[in-house]
Image (tube, rainbow, N blue to C red; front, side, top):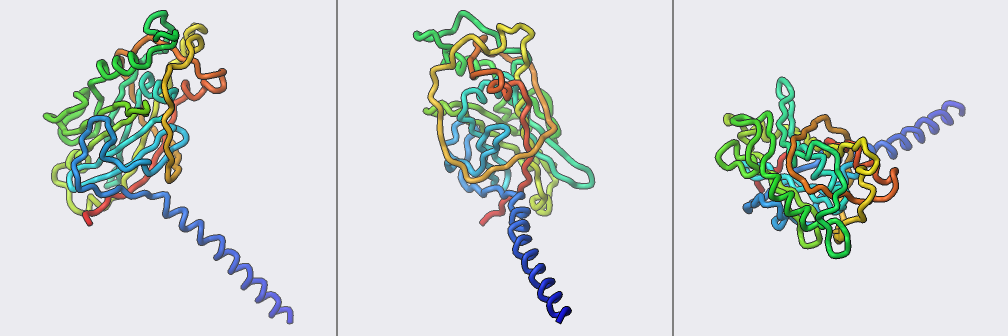
Amino acid sequence: MLNTHINHILKYTFLLLLLFATPLIGFSQSLISKSKWTSGSITIDGKADEWEKPLNFYESKTKLMFALANDSANIYICLRSPEEANQIKISRGGMVVGLSYKNKDKHAVSVGFPLGSGGPMHHSDGGLDAEGRPDFTMFKNEFLMNNIVMKIAGFASKNGIVPIQDSLGAGVKAAIYWDISNIMEYELVIPLKELFGPAYTADDLKRELTLELTVNAIEKSKKKDDNLEHAPPPNMANGSGGVNGSMSGTGQMTGGMASGMPNVSYNYGNDAEKGPLFEKASFKQKFLLAGKP
């Protein structure tokens, strides 16, 4: 009788463990994403017209929506930043996107763009619109005029400071623009031959890749008056859009070089709310390339 009772308990316990283990296994598998195959041409112009919206994923630390695609020659990455404060952080602090994989050793490539201003944001009496707000149109125009280079590392044929439309070099291209709702859009293309080397094989295309993204912090000014406190927020519409997933993690890549940015400051609430502007945010996401259908 006692043995029968114990057997029932063990059987019941096993069923419970199996019941709870099943969703955990499914969750582990979902941590590896998959790129989407694209058969059409994606123009790297910072305009996400070729991408299905909303983008596949949203990452809460960097506050970015993102998607991955590939064809037989390239990997494409698209990012969207709907929050104006985060756009300022990306513009001023800079951002680095990296890809890595393990062979005998870990191999990593990275693209630093934008490179960031390399200094704190200051208040200025100039560059205001008719309502006395910082002119966000001026901000965008100056950004596009001054951010024309990127820093690339780890690629097969060329590295260093190159034009963002580097068609004569490694073929790595990046662009940022704003859509009609003032959502910042970022596009990047990385040729497979630059990631894996010109002699890459079909087995290389099956490797597990890791996307690493870091948004650097805005440098704090030593002057209290310069810490984004005086001017009202830019007169800018917030974009909106749903997302289909959420991922988080930590990345290790950083970057930053001087580039011209307008000297305007923005008010994003109290010190607690402004904290993320002065903190580096990063994540990692594993993924596999898509095969041709």
